[in-house]
Amino acid sequence: MYSEQRATVIGFNILRFDIPILSFKGVKYEVGGAQKMYDLWHNLFVIDYLQVALPLKGMMFKGLTLAYLAKLLREKGVANVPKKKEKGKVIKTLYERKRFEEIEKHLITDLEIIRLVDQNNEMLFRGTSPRFRGRSILKGGASGSSRTRLPRR
Image (cartoon, rainbow, N blue to C red; front, side):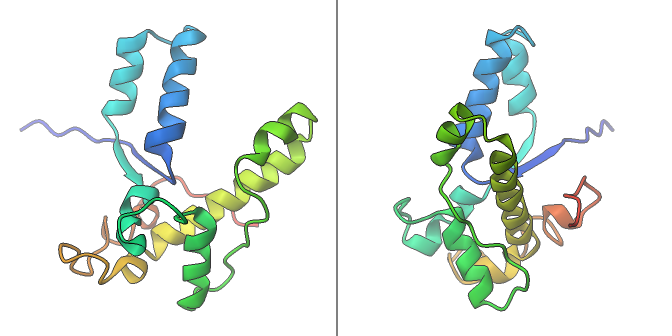
């Protein structure tokens, strides 16, 4: 019997932004051709919490932000949920002004929220869909497994 382990990539809006951008840049900077980039990204197990959270907003993207999920986590009693100060759109301006430390802080906040969404996905998404039966996407959430975790501050 053949068993293949797959990497799991977890994020917010990664199917519509991060993965396409990284694929394009991989081809542009000759990390690999289009087929190699396709194979790299399409042989992963991907959890995009923007897609998972659609039932929370009646299947509408409007208003479905990482800040909104952070707010829901706080309302449900999850401790130490960071507050997002800006939207991702500010990254371009910060980059142009060479304010790299602010970009890093912004991205770390995003990753901390995504980790908390993943760790609390069962509680957060229970009852949002008739097909969701209160089970986590992966037992214990994807970040509850033996994958690399964010460093604690």
